[in-house]
Length: 165
Image (tube, rainbow, N blue to C red; front, top):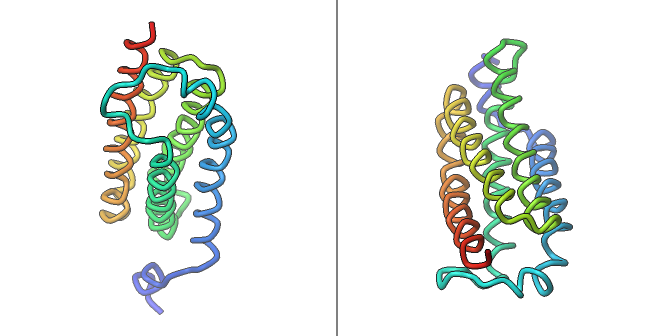
């Protein structure tokens, strides 16, 4: 079998591992988020474009599945080359910042601190898209909904800060 054919073949367990990693980040973020929705978050003034709280979990679940799929597509090209190592590092930094935002915003109630984290997250997603695209164009495209959602979340975060200072 040629190396091209082996790259195209779907591998179930690596895909499940990729899903487990990203959904695990989402589950951990939900540990900070979920208890605060009916409590602290409900007391904040929010802009008119704030989605209903029940919209966040399904949107994030879809986004985490897209992230996992993109990571899997890049993983299939894994190697010991520096370009792959950088790509992997950028990916994990992005996941860490994703989790950190929930910890800072919902866990610590630091709205402005969370805004700074979301700026770093946005940059890291943009960088991840660029690095993922070097390995697989589809992997890069799969991260665009994530970037758009985090753009919206950043606008929402900033609005909540200004409405509640």
